[in-house]
Length: 267
Image (cartoon, rainbow, N blue to C red; front, side, top):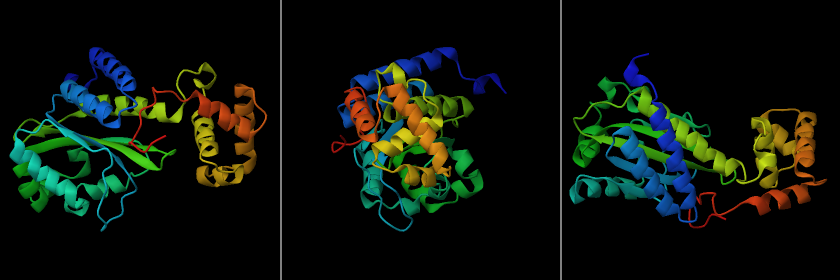
């Protein structure tokens, strides 16, 4: 791997510092998104940032973008082009959307070349009309599915038209940041008893917090009901409770202002 594709320790440290700052702004979904984008643009050498919550997207239907934040446009004209595209919710115009939809529900971060090759990208009408007019080209897209809300936290970072491509180092840095941000929605912060839950235990806990039965959780996770029951019993022991009601009440009480609100309607 070339040196330019390696993550620098200093950049990783800066990303964790940024995460702490985002937590401080957690009650304000627009505020923390703006601060996050400013920090990630600085760390990745990008100029334009976009972030919002994303309900489930269906091809052929207009998309909604709750808590939408955009920043860094070269001017009002460029931003107006993108605002018009977003207002129409015309996601099918974007040729990278099929690659994104294939990964819906799983955390990912992709640079444009991993979504669509150059030949198809630069021949597409959306690119030559919307992207070029908005003054952006090279970009990455990162998404994290939050099972508690059934929505995706999405962000995209862009470099101006004509600037160098984004690489693996930038992709890895944003992906690492987004995974750590996602953990804030999965685990109640500030409670050491939950700090070392396994992935399956976190998924089981998430299901219980959403009112799912053990049978329903087993079906969602493609596990046996017996296995899920064992995860639930382990959660009981860790939290010092003896029922789902007590577990949900205990975990719900641990949620603090440091968990980022996805939208104004969240929590």
